[in-house]
Every structure is written in C-alpha cells, then in structure tokens.
Length: 326
Image (cartoon, rainbow, N blue to C red):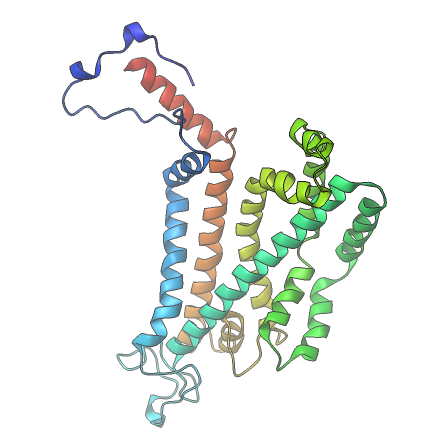
C-alpha cells in the first residue's frame, strides 16, 4: 500500500466537516480474519448469497411450525386434493391431499443437511489424504495416488445407484458417506501438490528438526496454510453434493419414502410440471437458490482470501489513490 507523504496530509482537525473517511484496506494491526470479512462484505453477490442461504435455513426449520400440516399428513377433504396454492395450503396439495409446503420444507431441511455434512466429509477426506500423500511421499504417496486414480476411473454414479438399495431403510447418513467417498479425489490431488511445496518451507523444516511428530506437523502447520483452498472447496462441494443427492433421488436411489428431499419432490412433480406446476416449481426453485447462493459465497471467499484477485487489487488501488488525494 502506498504510504502518503506526511507533508501532503492535512491534520485531522482541519478535515472538512462531513468528509467521508478513506477506508484503508490493510491497516496495521488488522487481523486476517477481519480483512477477509471486509473484502467479502464488499462483494454484493456474496452478501446476497449469504443472506439467501441464511433465509433458506430459517425457512426450512421455522416454516414447518407455521403450518398445521405435516409432510406425511393428508387433508381429509377430497375437494382439497390436487389444488393450487391457497390460504389453507400455501404451496397447494398433491393428488392424495398431502401439503406441498410441508413436504417442501422437509425436503429443504434434508437437502441442506446432506449438502453441508456431505461437503464437510468430502473436503475433510481430500485434505487428509492429499496432505499425507504430499508430506510423507515414498510408498505412502504412491499408495494413495493409486487409490485416487482407481476411484477416479470408477463410475461413481452407477456404484452409488447399485449400493443404495442395500442401505434402504437405514440411516440417511450412510447415503451421505457414499456421496462423499466418490467426490474428494480431484481436490486431494491439488492439496497433495500444495503439501509438497509447503514441506520444504522453513517453518515445516524447523518443526521437523525440533522433533515434532509428522502427523502433528500435517495438522498444525500444513492444513492451516491451506485454509483458503479448503474453505472455497467446501462451499463448492455443498452445491455439488446437493445436486448429486437430487440426481440420485430423482432416479429413486437417494432418500427413500416416507422421507423426502428436494430431489424426490422434483422427481414426483416432473410428470405434472406443466399441468400442475406447484408440484414441481417450488422444490426446483429452492434447489436453484441453494446452488446459486453457495456459488456466490464461494466466489466471494475466493476473491477475499486471494490478495492477487482482480477485485482485491482494484480495492487496494482505490485505497492508494484515495490516500494520495487526501
């Protein structure tokens, strides 16, 4: 950042009343977390995505308490079956009188939880495998690379579809684990390359010479220095896992009845999307909002964590010009 000439800077007492203070981008003493947060908040799309995601969480977990219907209950009045949105059924009803709003809220809950938990598992596996392969090298690196290459060539969608009926009726967490097991390989290769470069850095060499255990070095020195990549990868994986779950549920291999997810609701409403659009449009719209909001947040985090990003450079340039003109 350009330091202004003290001669050209007016004393604070002579600053005109009402003049807006120039915002400095990287003040001395400012923590990295605050700096990243300020950069993120400058991105309007990222703030919009964060607001949408928070709103969807509130809607998913508060919405069911605002209606008298449950996602498995049926309206006893046949005249209310397969009708559009009304004051009694906000999102309409299905052909057997089930409340679409209650089902959509349940599906939104399930898809959000699957996306967040699945992305955490995916990023965690990639971080551990990639960092261990890059730091230890040798036969450990070769063995893990062989595993990565093997999983990359396997048809993951087909394998999950074959294994899903085996877990039918059991915990949905098993389905999330299946999604995570086949989604971490590409990221782990990137992390491996970073680990290879970081293991030669001075702070890692110093920890090694001091006798710090290698596993401790990986978790205390390597992974924290990859936090930017891991955070961005996590945000991207949330959308990937939700789309994967929705696709598998659409074909009947994901969340099983009587439980629902956005994917199962989209599957059930596809055949009537033109004649009875309320069966399809609400679940499809919420799924689109989730993926878009997560992508907006991921783009903002990428620029906020990378000082060489065009947005960060432009902000620094504006700060420097403001300092010179002040």
